[in-house]
Image (cartoon, rainbow, N blue to C red; front, side, top):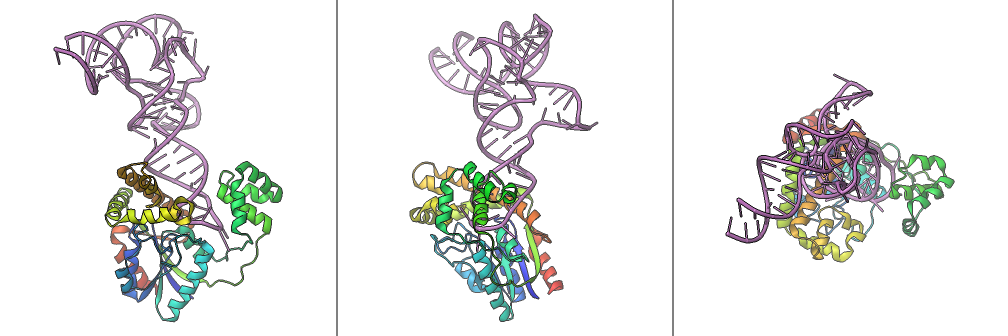
Length: 293
RNA sequence: GGGAGUGUAGCGAAGUCUGGCUAAACGCGACGGACUGUAACUCCGUUCCUUCGGGUUCGUAGGUUCGAAUCCUACCGCUCCCA
C-alpha cells in the first residue's frame, strides 16, 4: 500500500517548514492540502512557501488556479491522488501538508465522495431564497436528510437540497487506499497566538496590502479567494472605512479563531492523528517516520 | 477648593426616573462543539461560584422596605469643567 505522511495543524504552527525538513531528510515531495494556496495570486496572505523554498523540494497543488476560479474538495481529491501516484512512481515519499482539515479528511476517507449532479446556477438560485423556505422544500423532498442537517446552516441546507433533488451517484472510480502516518502540530495556545499575531505584522511588511487590493479589484468578498483570512479584513481599510490598525487587529482575531476551529476539527474529525510538540516537531516526526517507513 | 458626571459579570454596555417578572438584556473577547463537493467557509453552545439542592453578586459601609443594581445617608475611586 502506498505510504503517505500527513502533516496537519493550525495556521502558523509551522507545517510548511516541517514538511520541507522531512522531505529533504526522507527524499520526499510535498502536496499542499490548503484551500487557499491553490490560488496563483495569493502568496503572502496564505503564507505560501516561497519560490526559493520550492526549489529545495518540489511542491504540488500550489498555484493551480486563478483567483476568480472555483474549487472544491472533489477537485482536490482527484488532483491529490494523481500527484501521489506520480510522486510514488518516481520512488519518492509523498508528504501532505495542509491546514484544510476537510481536504485531509476527504483524502484519507475510505469512502469515495458521492457525486451530485448540480450546477452553479442552481446553487445561486437556492442562495436567493430564505432559510425557512429552503427547509420546507428539503422536508418534503427527504425528511431524513432534513432532520440530519443543521437547520440554521444555510450553506449545508442548500447542499442537502441538491442531494435530495438529484440523488447521489457512485463515484466513477474507486480511489486508492493509503497507509498513512498522520500528525498534527500542537503548541500551547498562548504561543500559537503569539505566532499568529507576529506573522500578521510580517505579512504586512512583505506587501500584503498590494495583494489584498488585487483581490478586492477582482471581486473582493464575492469570489472564493476573497474569503481568505488576511485579505478580507483589509477590504474595509482599502475602501477607507477603517484604519490599518483596526484591519490588522481584525485579521489577527480571525486567524486566532480559525486556528481554534482547525484544532477542533483535527481533534474530532481526523482519527488516528498523532499530536507533535511544536517546539520538537522535527525530531519527533523524523523518529516516527524512520520507524514506520 | 467649587460644579457636573460616573462606578454593573474578563472587557464594553443596558437596567436606576416608574423597587419584585433580574444571576442581571445586548455586544465583544475567551472557551467548547458541529461540519462528506464554498471548509481560511458556514453554523451551534457555554461564559459569577456550585457537591446542581443551592450559594454569593451590581464601588464600599450603613439605612428604608415583606422585597433594593434600582430609594436614602456617608465614604472611596475615576472623568470633565471652573478655580
